[in-house]
Length: 278
Ligand code: COA
Image 1 (tube, rainbow, N blue to C red):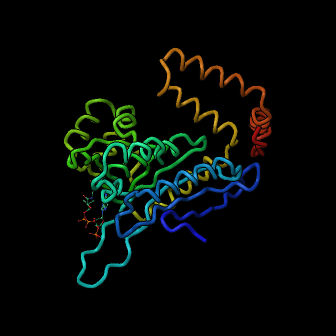
Image 2: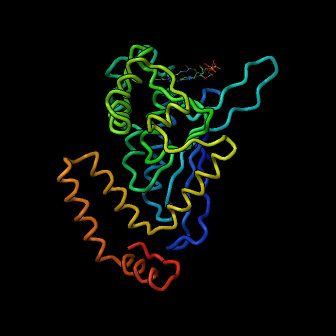
Image 3: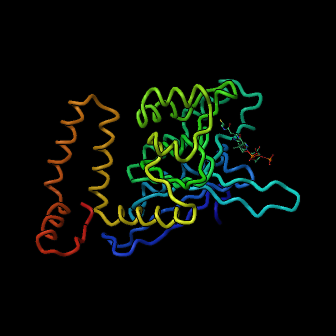
């Protein structure tokens, strides 16, 4: 039976090696609530992060929001959404001791800590915890009708899923301050200018572009991809000179892998590499 609030779909990657590679596509599925993240969504994301980590066939993960349902007559249609934040209804009458355990073990960190590459496919609103989920992914690709923001300040709150930290490292101090202190909506164009997203596409091109990128990544050696992801993270987590050293150590260690032999040989043979993932 499928989990209702997070739909999981696997897309086969042709010519992946080792064979059997898939992209795992996770759809936040609360369209009536603009895919706002409630406790169940968090629980399901955390569970699927564990499963994805254990499943060697999963090479890349795409996270997206479900499309709005067809509007009912005389009712305002719901807008497209990646996720319009944490579910505010779960904040009513809550005190710090109620929410602390939840926020200390949350979906944003589970996604961030995945060793496999992640792409946020944003079509519509990515607000508050929704933007934080996109920021927990490695790459963000959005449609031209998307809107971003950290509007927690309007609720008497601040981001609690890593937004202040990840946004600051991604786009810098001044821009992060502006977004968090004003709580204002950021248009798709502005998000591209600021560097929140890598790319903007028309809504109808979004899915195929994300899948193609995920497939491209999934055709590399899964072992080398993990080492590459970890190396880029050094830049966020270490002082510069230590990061340079750690990257060099990671690079040198790859000389003992089969996939380095396979990659270099296939370059000279002008053939496609058949990775073994070690
Ligand atoms: N938590 C819970 N429910 C949410 C939600 C959230 N973060 N965001 C949207 N919803 C719900 C609305 O309550 C509404 O439910 P209803 O139809 O049962 O009344 C439904 O989703 C549709 O939202 P609605 O506000 O009617 O759509 P809109 O097009 O008028 O406005 C937004 C869209 C995104 C501007 C507006 O929903 C909004 O401001 N959401 C909250 C954003 C936010 O503050 N996020 C940070 C939370 S920490």
